[in-house]
Length: 474
Image 1 (cartoon, rainbow, N blue to C red):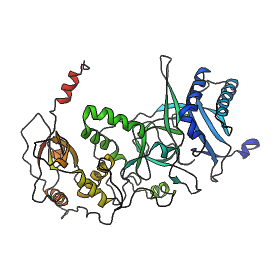
Image 2: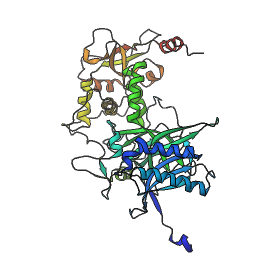
Image 3: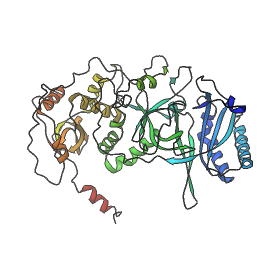
Image 4: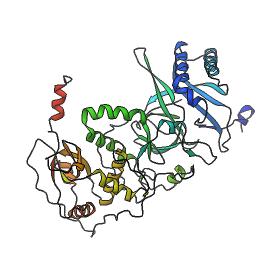
């Protein structure tokens, strides 16, 4: 048995901070002043987080809010730490904040590098019925600071989830005050960035992320995307705080730069490839761990708000089931003879049809669907793929032949095509059965209109030509 102070050691766990004056002034002015002070004093700091602590198993707060400053191992003497802490406290007093303490800890800032983000791979998980987590909106900056969720103690909270390449599905607590991190380079320079911090769910849940999870989408229980996971900080490379870039910062840049370079269709497909497979069905995982959903949704909601996204509509369509257990014949195709372009086999489709299908599958009747919301299109396609079991079902841009209805166009030059498969070798090997195609045709109301081939707007050499024309190629 321990004796002395160790016998009375109090176990604590991290909690985020909301509804405090720091939430208002930290990112606009105070946080940057603290960073500049530490740089001026020569402190090799790695992270600055605003947290509080509670007693494990009791939920009772332990001490005041803490400005938690991470520094490189064995880089800060006690006297220097005292000087820096007093300087930070002086800044806090300038803003009328006297209920915050400053603490230092040794941390390692670790970029949690992961796989390439835009890999168009079919998910191995067979989504169970009614267990999808649809992504249909963003967590705004205001909601990050002032969440519309409450925990079982009636306190503001923002529970989030991610499905990472290294650690799989984990649940965490997002903070209401952004953190600062500092990355040092070999040429004696450093770079400061502001990040959205995610804390472990509790003292038993372990780290929210680990190396290899970078690029994972982080969302809340209502299917709102919060950010993209980037890095972490802790005493070892196993991070106790995870950092993400908020998506409300990224989306304007994606719209501005992506649309100019690749066009709206390409941005939509790239985005759906990034976030579609990892999140859908992630709560249960491929082992159907039932308690994950119970834990994640163990949050009391404000009145008239639903946790975990909208319920599936009672008018949802009947799922496709094969008529026999024996192998069914695949569709017979006559391939186009144009080696310079990719061709897609399918039908032109409208946004209105996809939105109505999504409403039938997931949304309450009174929900107002935004016509240009990419999350609605992504979720409609996920539901449609699940219903008809066509593995390579995709929404593709195709060259406009000039006789397509206007509501089926992405833009004057490209058609929105619901593609069953393409003429690429890997997709031809996995082409659907005739029975699946007939099911989809009935769903679309196109029983008398067979699918046809549509050519990609660009040749196979288009992007190589653009690269050479830019003068950047070596």
